[in-house]
Length: 295
Image (cartoon, rainbow, N blue to C red; front, side, top):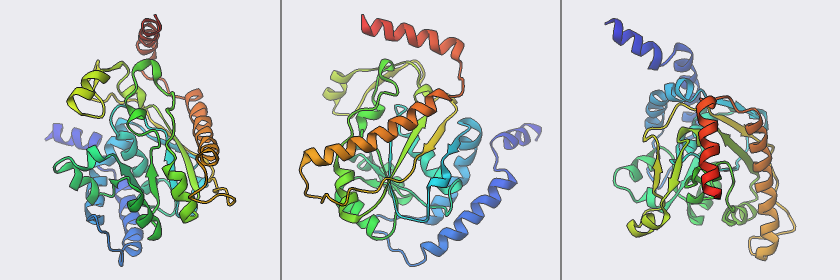
């Protein structure tokens, strides 16, 4: 009995979080009372899942959020760096926008086709708000007042070996053309701390290609370590009203680089204030791995 009580005190839902979740979903039930989702989005399931994940968010990853005041009662395309080998960053960002911003919202995360087609997992992610990140799906959600979460780096963002940690990969342009079409502001965001979940990683790209999987990391640990996570939300970026969704690639690229630059600035601030995590062991080993990679 004492053991179960101790476990509950560590991983159970606190009275404060229980009240917070009830308050959040009271607001969301009003918002979604007439909404019809073609992918099976289930608000009640979202609430149940959130109640299970709160201890992971609060106590395991100790998530902090900065810049909540930049999020207004508006529809956004939230653009984030992609980090951490597995897409836990998307889960943590989604929880942050439920708990830490006003009004609360369910961010509809865009996921890769590989993930959307997985048995059971694909259906579960759709029911909890994530859908295949194609243009038609994004347009539908924005038309219905839903904010979406995109990772323009794609799989390249998470599938980085240790020497490339926190080096953003080239941003794809699709999100910006959609933002132009739907006149939707872009909200830049950076996640810091997720790379340390798997601090020593080597990606076997040739084998991943042979097995027809997006990425195949070899890691020192097979379960994410409890690295503290910080989420930085920047100020909204309005789209260039002189451009259209059909504008030349060169013009679109200039605007995408502008968004990428804001994400990088947030990332730089986050790295400067990153909380220590086994630094006495991780940093020397990371330097050794990077040195071997350069040689």
